[in-house]
Image (tube, rainbow, N blue to C red; front, top):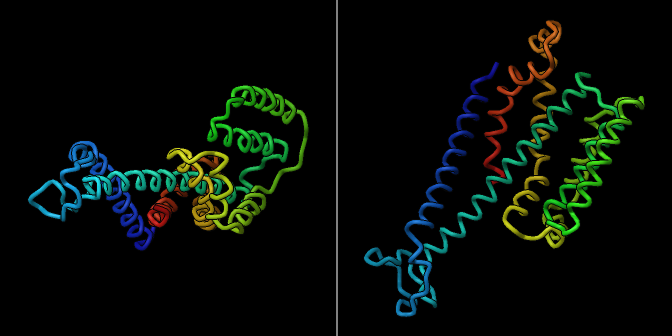
Length: 261
């Protein structure tokens, strides 16, 4: 059951998220509806001081452009990238954290061959999709063929189960060892600097924070008696996760989500 602290943290998280979403909507509407004229060049209104009597509420620059309009336009981009990348990090960290906790409890067993079959194509395909390479179509077709072939072989080859939590924790340690700024300096020249590309990159390299929260919380919740009872009743593990684990973890994650905005 959820305690009062978790409920209040969840409410605070929901409130902050809704406030950010409302700010993005107002920002987008303001930039689109009210500040189109202000972002044009007005050579007859150069260096106008801030005033409520004119359209230049924050003044104008050396070209007569409205400073408030440019501020709203820049804030819109920053808010969209920040919130979307944080949501990507949240989903990736939550999924990997649940898989890690289930692996510790023996609720999921995946062979090394099957895990690599899913991991390697993802690692190769993602940079291609982000960078929009010309040869991406040919490589995607080849990877799709190898993926199907690997799945067929994985069903016939018996391999020992892979301790997923140890493997994921190793990836987390590697990502957290390298400073995030250094990773950006290495990755951005290869993949481009478009808004959606930066959003994906930010999201895929900041999920370790949510992973640790989910892993620790799920590891504490899954061994509880009422979770074990669902397994004894013959219900699938996904039922216990959706019914009991997620309601206890999501408020905590949403409470920490604004920290990555």
